[in-house]
Each structure stands twice: as structure tokens, then as C-alpha cells.
Image (tube, rainbow over all chains, first blue to last red; front, side, top):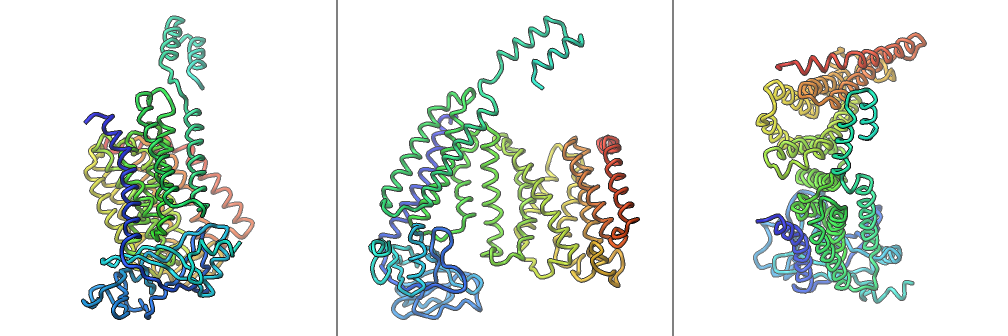
Length: 163
Length: 398
């Protein structure tokens, strides 16, 4: 293969990789079952870090990683429960996969990017327990964030009232 | 001093004839590169600033533009830059635009990763993003002609690789600053391993200078940090598991040293010994108790511990031994600048060791005079004998 052809490959590779990544994330976000979970702030750490909110997701069940490290799952249907990955009940039809690290469960949905101008107001709303996360959860347990709700409305719809 | 000035000096000294002067001048004028380093630097600096501007715009996360529009603009820009790079490829040897567009494209790839993370609210770590970027731009980096571009790529690759590997054994390292020595040890070992990996493959040799640079910088930082930590009785609470990536890198590095064709057995022995001592230095509790100190800059009374058992005596001795072995290797393999730098650091560490061991003495007037004389003496000795020492190291197993 001559060098010009290699250059075409070298230029196309990042574009295709990035486009593929964006496409897969988009598919994941737009498919799967919609789940809405409340979120809350956790003291004393500041919720706002740069241009994103970080928060604690309320799965409706006690999520404790005190005794375990590594993969774990939260079952959402039919009965909510928290399990190490191998112990997930076979009748669980909707679940979210994540990791236990240093006593905290993380499913990659603990960060929501927001405009800097609304950061403080949104942080206060989340602290006041007015925040909810709309997720898309596929049958493999992967969760993707669809939206952030403030008092039941999409956060962008509440911007007017926040200004 | 430029070529013309040199030629004038040689002509005046009678070293070259006027005909030779004219011939060399004509040759240099004809073969002078059309672009120069300054032009490259400023053009690339401009591209970097534009890239940072794009990243800042994305970071501003403007809410009124739809996600599809943001992605559409981003991918259109990527495509335009890609076409520009391809278009400038035939002029890559004579112009700066190929390199500028290449850097711009690579920066925009990085910005695109940030944009995708932002749009889809991805919770990954920054070092995973760097590693992904380095992977997708690797082929492109092989086309870079400027040292800056390759250095930029290598720097981000090492950052991504080191932190990602440590993340395997210490997830969320930001919560565990005690685990930082694992990063400090891994960085030079990985840089050196990759440095040796570039030798068998001709297309990778363009990265070797950057990898060697980062090896030297990170090795000095690692050595200084472990010396301070051990001398101060720190690093008593940590786990062997944190160091697993570094131990794997050390194994690969040892293979790289042993299989390096240009090294004689003496070089291999010196480097492997230095590597072994460095691993010993970082090992949790073989040589250091964290409890026994002889003295520390005169700030505390001598403990009831033997001179050779004390952490703050063993630490500098290990530092000096590692530096000495590396200096011998550098001198023997003809790396003069490295040899000078390492021997200078050896002298500096000797002076600090003197203050550590004789801390109380330095607090007196006589002690300060002795200390000052020692510094001057060491500097003079280093300056006078470095060439002789280098000649001796070069002659070893010649």
C-alpha cells in the first residue's frame, strides 16, 4: 500500500472511530427502556466540578459496597435489589451494571454536563432533591443518560425560570 | 553561530580557500530549507491556540444549540481538516501547512472526544480519553515531520497509558494519594520500555527522542520523590498490588535492555543493576522501616539507630548508587549531556547528604564555612574531573 493510501486510512480512522462512538452512544440513548431515578447531592463534597454536576443516584434500594469491590448490579424489575454481578437473580428483567469502588457504586451515569451559567442554580435544585435522571437501560444492563429533570420537567425547560 | 559566520572565520584563518568558500556558500544557499524552525513553531503554536479555543467553546457547553448541530459542525471541521492534510501532503517537505493542519486535526480529534463525552454525559476518566485519542491518531502521528508533533503525541500517550494502567490496580486514584509512588515508578519504566520498543521498527524511531526525554524527566522526578519520601520516613502504608503494572513494565524493560543490539554486556549489567536498585527503593519494606532515622537536616536528635540502618542514610546511598550506575552507562555509551547532568546531580546529592548526616554541624559558624567549602570543592572537582571520568567510562569494556 503506498503512503498516500496509508494517509487516507490514518485520516479516516479517527473520524470513523469518533463517528462510530457517537452513533453507538446515540443508539444506546434512544433505545432501551426509560427509567427515571431521583438524584441527590452528597455533602460535604461540592456537587459542581467544572462544567458538570456530580450526584448520588437513588436506586430505591440500599446500595452498599462496603464488603465488595468490582462488578455489581442493581436490579430494578421485578424487585429492586443490589447484587454482586454473579448473584443477579435470573428473573431480574431490568438491571443496571456498574462497579463497586471504594465503597461507592458507579454505573457511569454520575455526571451531567451543564452550561456554566446555570451551574449554581441547578446544583441548588439537585441539593434540594428536586432532580431526577431519565435513563435508557438496555437488556445488557448498560445505562445512558437521556435527560435531567428538575421538579419533573426537562432542565432546559426550566432555564427560563432560572434566569 | 550561522554557517556564513563560520565560513568567514575559516576563510580568514586560512582553513579554506576562496573557491571552497564560494562552493560551500552556493551549496548551503541551494539546500537551505524553505521553512525554518521559528516559522514552524509559530504556525504550530497558532494551531494549538485555535485548538484550545475550540475546546473552550465546547467546554462552554452552550445550551441553545442542538446536539446534532454540535456534532455536525464538529465532524464537518474534522472532514475539512482531513482534506486539507491530504491536499498538503505533496508539499510536506517544503511547507508548514501540512504539519499545521495535521496538528489541528489531531487537536480537533481530542476536542471531539470531549464533545461526545459532554453530549452523552459520559462518566469516563480523562486518561481513558487520552488513551483512546492516542490509539485513533497513532497512524497519523507516523506522518508527522516535526519533532513537536511527535512529542505532543508521545506526551499525551504516556499520560493516558500510565494513569490507565495504574487505574487497573488502584481505581479512583485521586482518592488515594498514598498510591502516587506507583505512578511515579511506572512512568519512567514505561517510557524506557516504549523507547526500546521503537528500535526494532524503523517507522517508530521518530518517537524515540520524545520517549527518551520523558524517561529522563520522569526518572529524575521518581528518584527525587522516593528519596524525599524514604528519607522522611514516609511511604509506610501501601500495598504491593499497586505496583503490579510497574513490575510488569520492569520485566519488559529488562527484556528490552537485554535484547538491545548496540549495548555491550557492561551496559546491560549497569542498566539492569540500576533497575534492580530502583525497584528495591520503591519496595514497601525490605530496606526501609519508616521508623529509623539518623537525622534530618539537624532538626531532630540522633535516634538510637546505627548509621547504616537509618532510612535517611540508606535512601541517599541508594540514590547515589543508581545515579552512579546510570552515569557509567551514559559515559560508556557516549551520551555526554546525560553523563554531565547525572554526575552534576550526584554531586548535588552528596552535598545534601552531608547536610543530612552533619546537620548539627551546619548550624554552627564553623560548620557553615566547612559546608560552603565543600560545595565549592565538589563543584570544582566535578568541573575538573568530569572529562577524565567520562573518558574512563568510555574506555570501560572498549
